[in-house]
Image (cartoon, rainbow, N blue to C red; front, side, top):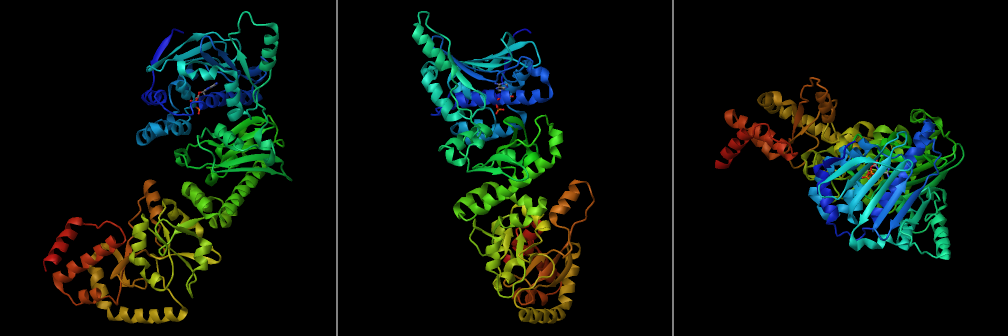
Length: 629
Ligand code: ADP
């Protein structure tokens, strides 16, 4: 091929600019990133070779070599993994994985350069960390299964070149021309220290070689050097196979960072092994923060599955249910055959057993975590929304999951949420059900008139303000033998049996007395409501809107509409507070005055719950009229 010069895509140019000008103190992590890439490439090659032996016809001894040339000021990381052809080089090193591109640019704009290291990690662009220490990088690669080698080179001034190249053997070499002030990375001890710190558990040997050996090197020096260079810098013990007591401080964290490309320590490391029906070792992690990936349907990476130290895959659905997709880590089992295909694994009985054990272990970890409320809240704030999905999707574990969920309540302070056990413990005398109220904002929910009677009777109300809560109402059903009841739907009544009876009688009487009024209001509001009736849920407000007992939930209506079904508006019921002086006053009005007051009453009900009024102009006009009086 002819040498081809390309411009970087805009987001890469932007990022490189930040990388180069980064004052980031831990520039050393570039080495971890490049070693991780090399090790991933070897893992991928091993995996591909399971089904295509011709890819390893060279009989490779898997290895990563770090070679320095002090005189030339270069550092080279070479592997004999998959390698890349020209198209791969262009795709992998010339663009950021397209799914992440937009999100990356957005985060870059919002967070700015200070958080660059975190951003680089989050968006899987670790390769570019090389430019923190180098002003020129050349990648030479020969892809397994092909004969041609290619090279990619960039000095970061906007573009890169692609050209034919030569390489002995398959794999990739990344050559860094170090900046003048970064010569520490030419030192064997420094490199060795970094490999031990970040990459000790990499499963193939990482060796060091000095390229610029002095021509007059003494025989004994040569011998010593060659002995040193033959020894790997890393111990290569798979961390998940070591027992917890043999793992040194920080090792889990480093392994986690290698595995996930996260730049932060994990929130929790969970080493465990399965015994009995299926034998396996697992090392799971809960990250500190949710990444945007978590909410992208195309998120692919879950737990990495190894069979006897060989990486098989990290498909999300395989070993983890969707609602635990925030968990990362490794599962290693010797009970699976090595020559498995991913398709086979999907319905493998052993996999199913591992998945169930992993799920149970994570839930029990969360159950323990729950005892430390500050730590649990930290977890909850990052992943609570995702965990909730489990009630809906994991029927077998739904009861365990419910105990891990939290909500704010009408009585509680803003931002504070409680577990269902605590709700149940605090239930009022005679309260049989668990009450909840759906709203978009916690603030509005707390002030909603639909909550008044519950409050008056000493019943707390869970505030369902997370978008997933509405879907949950379908599957929560009951907790501790108590039903979940929407305070803004159907008939609800509060208090002891005697209180309910008395209230019912009083209501029937009021309804009888207000019969004419209720009918006139209904006529006045026409198509806006399905009915007008006396309320059992109001204390201080004159009126509120409630859903019919069997009404479709708004989420369902939205979904059906999106699927192009013609779903009529679910009309609600206007409930009035028979004891309220305003209601009595309006009941005494006639003609236009009555009509205007009813219209305002209805708008007031909408505003009180945080909904927009149907006709803003008319509302403003009526309000102005009222104020003039
Ligand atoms: P990430 O590794 O997080 O995907 P990088 O920017 O570090 O992001 O690398 C981009 C891609 O380039 C990798 O996903 C991989 O496909 C490819 N790549 C990088 N280094 C190597 C290597 N040594 N051998 C083979 N492919 C590599």
